Length: 304
Image 1 (cartoon, rainbow, N blue to C red):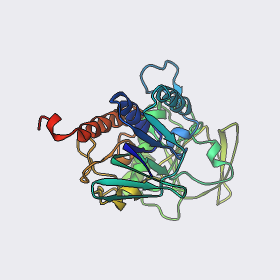
Image 2 (cartoon, one colour):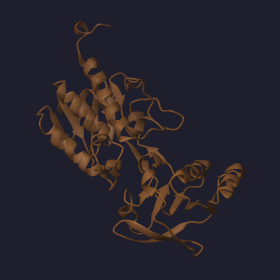
Image 3 (spheres, rainbow, N blue to C red):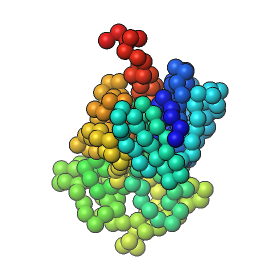
Image 4 (tube, rainbow, N blue to C red):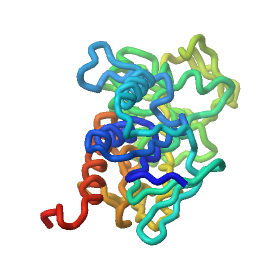
């Protein structure tokens, strides 16, 4: 079994940032990347400072790995970690192939977005199917937009998108409609149609949606789709070592990204319900790495 000072689980912006900071602290790091997550879609990010015209999430990820390649302290392992346990002050991470250990762990496991599933759906994600008004609301100016979801949050997002376009429809994509009467009145007042139906197919080219087909037989033309069907934080590893979760299921951390488990930190989208941004993930990854670095110092080097 190979031992490291820190294991970083998750290879998105939070994990890459954490690994880079730890390398700069001259720590021996294992970065586990299963090649999944939001930064593997087709999204172009226009909110990250320093990239006029935007930067593809995949390109930003690749640039991060190029940067890490400058440091021998970081070993990148293309493994999905299936298990995590803590024994006598050490963490043990396991996959189907092997097991590794360290004194500290940073979880950057992200979330699973609940996109509508139809033939070829994944080719539209990040091109014309989005989840975040902060990232992509600006890009739908005067476009024909369908907001997908059956809750007040879906209706609220549609109402907020009026800032960018008047061409809006809300589609529940569910057997249930949980949008209350107050929000239904607001949608009606704003001339935003509410369709209680489900997607069964889509029409488009090169990731650009043209129309969706509903269970009722209706064809709805659109340019973009905003999915508000929620996301599930990937917290199985955190729960396996006793980390506290919020009511919404996210990992509870303090301002230094510490969990309630000594030596365990978390960063990125897995830590909060709101502010799922690359800028936030990079910041939290660096903060978690700095806290883990301090944790690893012997007591005589600390000022507390």
